Length: 275
Ligand code: FAD
Image 1 (tube, rainbow, N blue to C red):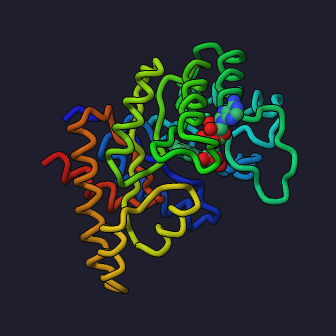
Image 2 (image 1 turned 90 degrees about the vertical axis):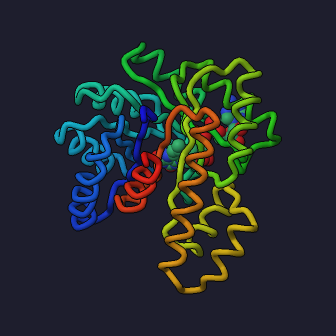
Image 3 (image 1 turned 60 degrees about the horizontal axis):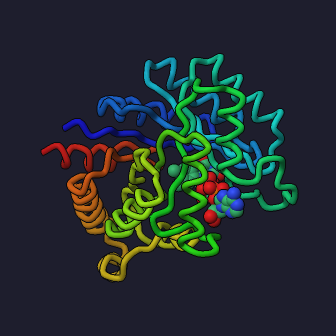
């Protein structure tokens, strides 16, 4: 199978978390992902922690893609970060607007991701592969689905090379999004973001906030398991593996796993796909 795989981490807050992530990452490295990406707290709140993990990944011989969000930042600080990335041999970044952290009122000099992409291209030429976010079930703040799609196309026009989607459990939403984007002239790879399911109630809360739908049939099934974590895990693995199979059969160019810093579920799904 030649499906491209990438895997996302968030920077842990504690030394124990960093050590645990190192172990999980070693396991995931055996899947030979194209790259590991590391999230970045909007407003620069995780700048040092993100970069520390990125440097560990590079030192281990894997390719790293730090995320970079622009909301609440100055152009000078973004330039400094890009210089730091480049000097460390980083050649890929996930460029985002981010969400304004609570208490921060000033949006900064770059207000949307398309402006960040434009800025990275203007400052760094073609030194970076730029990946942007896409929303098959639409961004929660989008005025209309069509407006969101036009805004997505803006990021591509500004110089993005690829996109990773918000996670979703409804394959039709992804295929519809691809179709509409293609009709707008978008021709970059749009890679589905895959969220393995480790528990239901937390996922349900998080999904409501970020605008990802958990279909009723899945919700009902999960709810019926109550505290039976083994059944939740088994059903989650089954559903997400089937989703991945359907996406790949339908032409998805790769899969990006939101690993939540653990290796087990991503590894299990990936291995099931290879069978
Ligand atoms: P944008 O593309 O700027 O879009 C945000 C909203 O503004 C949309 O509703 C869009 O329709 C609208 N819009 C876009 N451009 C314009 C314009 N020019 N004029 C008017 N309206 C416009 N968050 C983090 O903080 N850190 C991370 O590391 C992180 N990683 C992520 C990785 C992926 C793959 C995804 C899908 C999301 C990630 N997020 C992360 C969450 C993301 O920051 C939020 O979803 C944020 O609300 C939007 O970021 P964006 O880059 O998609 O913004």
